[in-house]
Image (cartoon, rainbow, N blue to C red; front, side, top):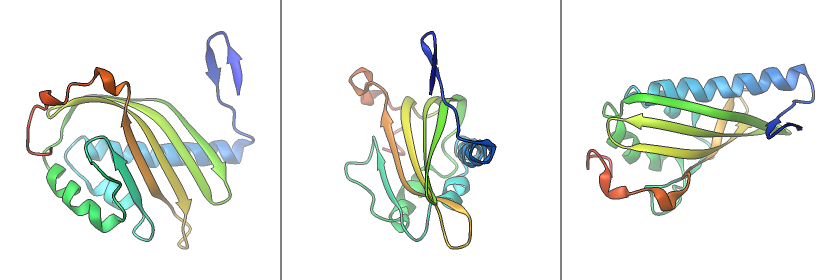
Length: 156
């Protein structure tokens, strides 16, 4: 990592790693595009069916497996639309057959406006594809968030 003034620039070790990072970031952005158009299939296809856990600001406990996400997906399917969203500062760190994607997500939706710190842990599985095995969506500065202002009670 290099510091240019107050902005830090992340450098990948080589072109292959940079291309793989761009691929993983692309997977996430594709899932987000669908998500913010009410289509949960992007994340349903990106999350591992073999090994998956999930933390979210609106869920009181860790979700332990993909099958348990069905209720969340049903609550959101067709309902969530983004007026605007932005992925900021995505960065991928690599291990052997694993990668950690971190970024900040700023979203304005028809249901609630929330800014998240996002952590997606990817693992290359037996079919050679990358899947998220753990996902955490935590609110940036939760002390500033008023959860009583949900625009719709349908997903809470």
